[in-house]
Image (cartoon, rainbow, N blue to C red; front, top):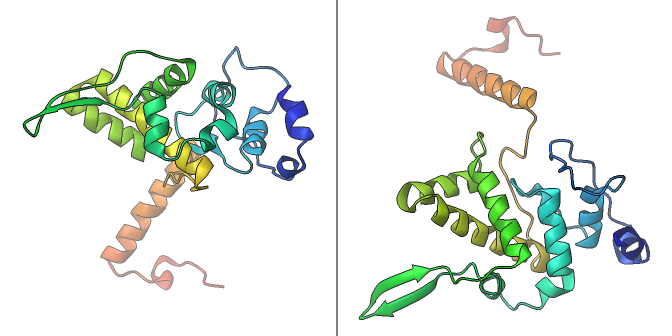
Length: 207
């Protein structure tokens, strides 16, 4: 069904993206379907899978529960997060916040985003979202960190889809060997700068 919808839309057929081999494929993921490409085409060139912790299951939940046109109906990212029931319901009296609990109630997309947030919290490599998760976790505990990160994911999704703002992860999911190479290069540059070394000092050819 997804393939037919995309292939019949000339505006989406033009989009193409390379496969993401670092994304884990869940056993329940439909076989013989490139969800990476489908998601990119469905959201008209917006690559939601660039978000760390965002799995194929999360992508399918966004498509099936709200979809491209559904997200665009929300006037702001806050409205979208509120619809997801991820925005704290602040109770204020005399200028003091008495309670800021997330409203009860759930849907499949909220659950999917909370699962993605939990996966982000388990990441070993430092990323903007992972660091955000751990800051909240340190102050308020893991449950609050999952809710806050899930809400942030909702905000990011809205901005990516509606405002076409790409998500930027500095490390950009470099493969392990690439990360090691990057670390070695950084250390070498630091030493070169520290000792004011020149290429000829290291017997490097400049040609």
